[in-house]
Amino acid sequence: MLSIVTLISGRGSNFEAIVKTAQKEAWPVIFSGVIANHSAAKGLDFARSEGIPAFTVEHRAHATRESFDEVLIHKIDQLGADLVVLAGFMRILTPQFIRHFEGRLINIHPALLPQFPGLHTHERALEAGVKTHGATVHFVTEGVDEGPIICQASVPVLADDSADTLAARVLSAEHQIYPRAVKWFLDGRLRIEGNQVKLSPPEPQFFKYE
Image (cartoon, rainbow, N blue to C red; front, side):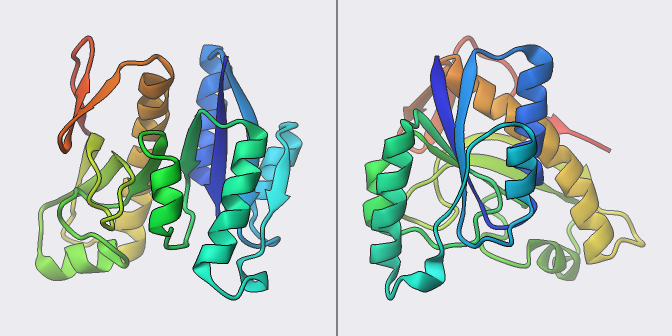
């Protein structure tokens, strides 16, 4: 049975969506732990309510990103993670960390990559006047938001959208595709070829939501 460790910085709503989907569909998986980079992260409370081990590794206690990541690597390895899921983890990971978990580290980004990498994606989408926005699940590589794409979901941008209303629509789509991508990984269906992810047997890796 494979093991998942999740990293969060806030409420961890995508983590919650993954756990609830796993429970509903009876996935053969162990949620070995959730790690937050500060103790106020609300997602820790959800983890504890589900009996999932919850930990804090305070980034402020470390003088450098490298020392923080070293402790994080050690803790994740202790928990025996087969897959590391980033669910709103607001820290830039070092190349050392990314290389250590290469091929088993995934993230969700609130935009249709390669559009709008980085922060403030919803504001930037509105400023750009795009008609479609969305979310991307991808493997993490050393380039920020440049890793091989596992799947994407699009949502419409409405004429009266604010950044908040658009963010809510995108988040709803995130909660649909992130559990799906995690399950594909657990089932051994994902294969990275260059900078592309092949799904076997094939099925759609792009979804549209209203």
